[in-house]
Image (cartoon, rainbow, N blue to C red; front, side):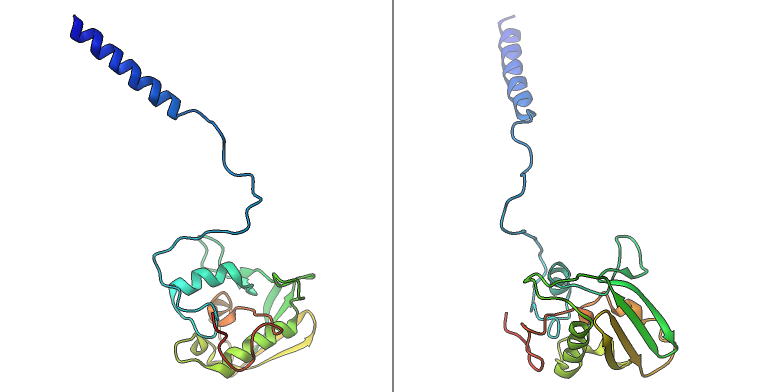
Length: 186
């Protein structure tokens, strides 16, 4: 009988701690922090899109840079991100119209010229460890106005080109921050 009482008291004590552990207390943060912490076991080799072509860097770069198109979760078809729309206007020209009012995180305007700079930079630097090879079918990039970017391709009807725009090869960088002809140190 005494053993049953001791067991009952012990069980009751454990139940009290278990129930107390389920209390709501203070719920999730209300914001106001100064940063975001992202955990990964992948190594980030560089934050310069012209240098890095690995999973760890892609994870970081998709959180930092803007892209014309992105892959929505669970969808293998690229959808507009910084672009309002993108389409083939001829068999060798893929044209994107930017959304209005885009800005880089530092407040600089993100324009079609920014996109042209980013693609020209990627091609010019041609880092052997970078993703430039994805742009081998790109002949040149034009920015006829602040909202329009036209990619002229070497070979017609390249239906893979839209799938390149959500990759590191197509990260849009600020021409006032990144050098046009060399990798930026991390």
